Amino acid sequence: MTAEQNPAPRERDRAPKQDRSRATRQRLLEAAVACLAEHGWAGSTVAVVAERAGVSRGAAQHHFPTREDLFTAAVEYVAEERSTALRDLFPDGPADRRAVVAALVGLYTGPLFRAALHLWVAASNEDQLRARVTELEARVGRESHRIAVELLGADESRPGVRETVQGLLDMARGLGLANLLTDDTARRERVVAQWAELLEQALG
Amino acid sequence: MTAEQNPAPRERDRAPKQDRSRATRQRLLEAAVACLAEHGWAGSTVAVVAERAGVSRGAAQHHFPTREDLFTAAVEYVAEERSTALRDLFPDGPADRRAVVAALVGLYTGPLFRAALHLWVAASNEDQLRARVTELEARVGRESHRIAVELLGADESRPGVRETVQGLLDMARGLGLANLLTDDTARRERVVAQWAELLEQALG
Image 1 (cartoon, rainbow over the protein chains, first blue to last red):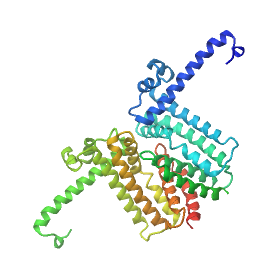
Image 2: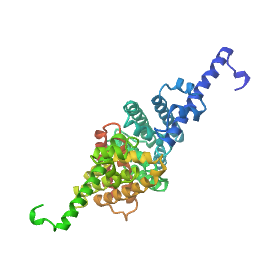
Image 3: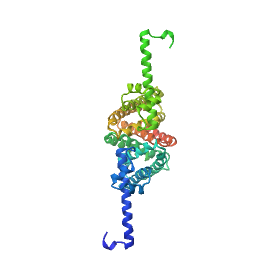
Image 4: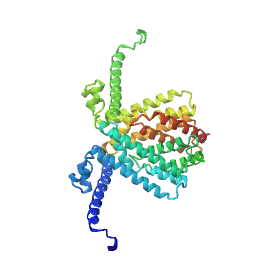
């Protein structure tokens, strides 16, 4: 920012404070996802995340009063970041289907999916978490579906197209699971190539 | 067993003891899968399972010296039971593809999948468990693939067929995940119907 662009003094005082608060929040969210991916739900507390983010525990609790608040917000934040990154990969909309399928599957094979998986599985046994994660999963799922339809150039008014795309995203989730304990990259690339071809035929 | 079929006295003494031991083992394995599905890895100990199975803790530890032994054996045992049940559903081999796809997907939407998922996710953070579960997953995965190829009447010598079947099993796993927190039956049935049709075209 050059001197000419500096805002008026009062605005300047407020802006850096807001920026710092936003930056702290972001550091906490990113640390929370990394923590969940590496240590699972049992090893992920607000205190552990605060330390990892280099933020005081009080500041962490100011932003996220409960453990559930922090981790559901974290998975949602990173899911949004990934969606934006995915759209940015294909700025002109519908693209080569094999590239799109590979990119969609990529959403489910990194640390975000690992973190989300830990949260889902923990939610299946913890009532407090369950409602929050169910709602989050539905929201993230709808957004992934929207992006997939858009980038695949799929016409959902045609019978079966909606279910074709849904099945593809289910497959992507299953490929994420298969990558949890071992590096499944080589097999996954062959499956992606083949299913991209099946999709090409199905979507026309 | 009628009187005429009774074995000789010495054999008779041994047989009931073996039967009792086998029955105890089986009760432990079934209780272990149910426990894992309901309470997750953190809530699943040998003691909890022994109590659920109505078996003394000493007897449980005689059969399964460690917690890892018990739970990996349990998931493998139930997976084998499910494979046998699946083959029994289609005794004449290759069958109607929609029915086969639905049955394959069914493997991943019940308590066994839920139990296996807890074990996988725990294994991703626990080194002791990781090697055992990785090996188990590979074995169970190969067997599922074999059954799928057989019942779908898929000719794997044709290019792409192997990957088509693999992708289908990945989709089944993803559908299992989508059923973890909510009852996804209605959506799943539509996806299965559509992909069974696409598979029909792909497999010829």
